[in-house]
Length: 374
Image (cartoon, rainbow, N blue to C red):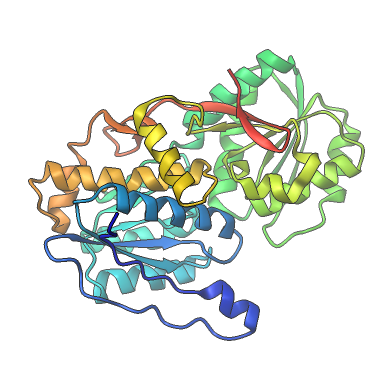
């Protein structure tokens, strides 16, 4: 298949490893009659594992929506607010993009999205799950990622049905919008299930030693450990919990939904349960096509890959709904008309508040892989 996109990628990780500075991204003319889409992804920094998955999903999605022409311009937001703002400014003012996908983290989105809102540039978030504060920014901000509030309660209920837990110890990152929002939802979900919290501990993204917090939580002898963390922190937390002798269940937030978590945690990840927005076992044609595209690309997909791929399908559908027009206002109007779109995530629609609307699932780590809990 002939590729109909131009992918502009800053090779920041390679430059970091060589000790050099990140080169500026190249620019190119948009495809004739198509749309220029900027994608702000965390290709370096704390959320780099998510960004890599998203990039793969976007690439496959752009190929699969042909003949819709999309110039995809990927920039590294470095998992920070500051770089996210810089990338958005470039997309809006220099590249004159028709729409923006991303950024990867809710923390970055809270700082960068207002720039797009002010400029009237549609933004489609593909991994921002903070329950509040994202689409509240304004009418140009949309997302295909289910919020923690849409996923965690059902996941915890199913986990309790399987495990029968009545008490919990909680650990969460308190310096990130994403992990803090996850904790808030977890706290309410546990209360609704009448689960008694025996202890709550916090950490920050730069932390690497969690023994003090985990020792306190394990010492309280809860039935389960509940953790809201990004994948990088999550793998270390789970590994250190096992090292301290914790053999019980661990319930994770959305940050656990990455193969990088399993790879880095190894056998310690076995048994971890987490809610997910993507049912990898779905036999729906749209999901089977997605899986085939990722297999062809040599990529093992995860939730973030599926959400990114779906983001491209949604923007292509918005352009279709706008009569083939791809101006900023045209795409914004088209997004409002997306309804029951067949995607890897299932039949996709937006809520009145421009949030995602589709069915979530629950998965558990078994034999080094995420497996859907039936």
